[in-house]
Length: 179
Ligand code: NI
Picture 1 (tube, rainbow, N blue to C red):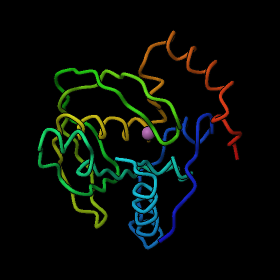
Picture 2: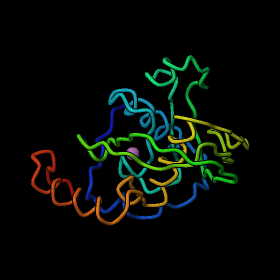
Picture 3: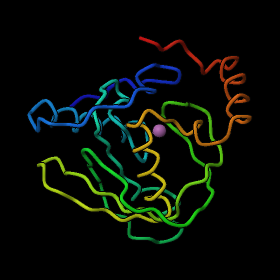
């Protein structure tokens, strides 16, 4: 396994809609293992394949170690690997602070559905259905947004997004990363 480089805004790969996975081959298994290792190494609760430069519909999530889950003493499922995920049901609404490994140093309030139901395939190509509330719901929506080419700054309204772009450009964190 290896820790992969995380692509940062405004890298073009983050803005492209990714392609569904059709081959559950060893290359995919390696990508998944590397994504998991990269997520944990960066203390993330989720990671999408295009964040490591692979334009495919693969996401990994683990919210079980998060502070929010501990505070609420929830029993979050451990590591989730989802291929070709799709939100089939969403309800409620809640606002919470969110960050993203592709937008280092930036956190903002994002409105998300409170509860979602997601279907997809696991790494062995078996169908799975996951229902999430709270942080898990937010992580599922955030990562599925990624593979649809959307970042959390696409969810905060035009004015806040413009402000973000101005500040991010000036910030020293905005290292050129457009390979
Ligand atoms: Ni993200």
